[in-house]
Structure formats: C-alpha cells, structure tokens
Image (tube, helix red, strand yellow):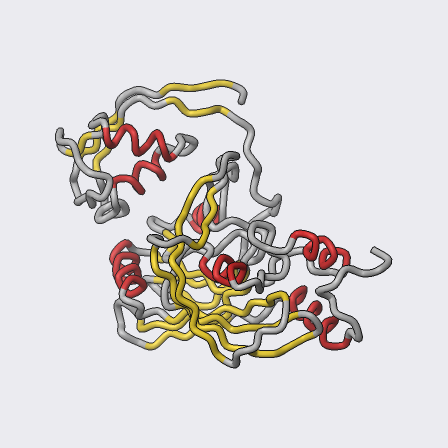
Length: 323
C-alpha cells in the first residue's frame, strides 16, 4: 500500500444510466477501490442518504434521486493492469441498438476490481465511448465464450428479469477429470459463498445455501477425461466448477476447485487454462421479441488439447512418469 486518500461529501444526481440500479451496486461502481464491506457499512450506518433519507442496500434508484456520498478512504495501491493491448477489439457476435454480444477470451476479467484495474466492460467503454454499457451476466476470468452486454438500461433490466425467470438458455462445454457415467444427469446442490482467511471469495456445497441446478450431457469420453455440455437452470457463482468438484469430477485446469497436481501435469502438456467455455446463449430479444441464438466456437487451444487427448494412447489425467 502506498498511501490513503480521502474525498469529501458529494451529492450525485441519478441520471438515465443509473436509474433502476440498486444503491449498493451504484456505490460499488462509483467508489472504485473502496472495499465492499465498507460500502455496506456506510449504507447500514445511514451515512449514505437518498433524497435526505436512509435507504436499504436493495433500494433501486430513480431518475432525479439525489445521493449523498460521505467521505471515504480509498487505498492508493498498485493494481494489476489489464493485458497490454493497443485496443481491445473482441469478435462481435451480435449488436443492435440495445444489446452487444462478444466472444470473450480466457484470462481477462469481465470487470475491474479485486486487484484488476480494468476488465472487459471498462476496456469496451474506453474503445467505444457509448453513453451506457453494462454486463448482462458474468463469466469467470478464465472462462471463454459468449458474453452479453446491454447498451441501454431498459434492455439491462429486462434481461435481468429474464435471467431470474429462467428464460435465457446458457450452455457450456467443460472437460472434467474421470469417466462421467451418465448420458444425462441433473445436478441440484445448495451453494454457499464465503471468504477465505486470505480474503478470497469462494463457494462450497452446504445445507442452507442457495439452490443450484445444472443439466450435464456427456459429449465424449476421452483418455482420463469426459467432455460435457452443461445447461444451466440457475446462474450461481462458480456453479459448474463447484458442482463438478463436489462430484469428484473437477474441471481440467481449475485453479480454485480443481486437482492441482493434475493441473500442473496438464500445463506441461499444453493446457494452461481452465477448460470451461460458454458455448451458447439463447433468448428472446427483450425489446423486439425476436429469437436470438449466439454461439462462440471452442478456442484453438482447447480444440488442440482435445485433439491431443483423442490421439493419445495414455491417459492425460495421470502424471507423466518422466514429469
């Protein structure tokens, strides 16, 4: 940590871009560098006021609301920069006046935070300078594939409603350790978020957690692995990764919930990332009602690893005797 800076009380008037957003999410975006715990503390204490009144963290802002933001300390620290690229220009899968869908690469966070100064949404805002651009959903940093963003708040709120109601079809391709025995298997487990002693956010299976629902379909069995398609019924944090790890079929290359010894072996054999890919996203357009089906092809590095598995005479899931 290099130092601390402290701002003064400010009054923010809610515009079209922030209307209908929850106050906690609004503050988290406004107060970059301020810990989430502190943002919720100033909300609970009443230091944040909307139109001179205390509000709950779930309060949704309205056009013209006046938000009092108290002085907060922000850490002036060195953060990881986004990959040094002249201009972030991802492949566009779909775009109109309301929505933007891109092909997300692995290794790039979807938004800044947790030590990352800029993510995909910030890079896109810099490159495109739109009046509004927000994530409809999120993908883990190491996950590649279809990523959807909204260009207007009305489209964002309607897409969020569709996600909550299960009206968005999300399909993933995932490579797991071991022999998956069922042609199709629905997995429903309670998932709970927690924070480790090191301050890292994790998820585990625990009674009383939020319900999670995935339908796994076997695509292909390989030497020591199984290639699955996952159709999500819910969209919990790290859902696929935690469910599969709990079933003793961890995702290949998963550095949080996976088989770490196996991962080291796989890295020497060419798989240097997590094998999880957002393959398809399907929904009815929130404004026009037209059917939208988006597909992102499997990245080259994952295709190459699958080819190596298909032609290998030995199981890649076992460490090399000469490793």
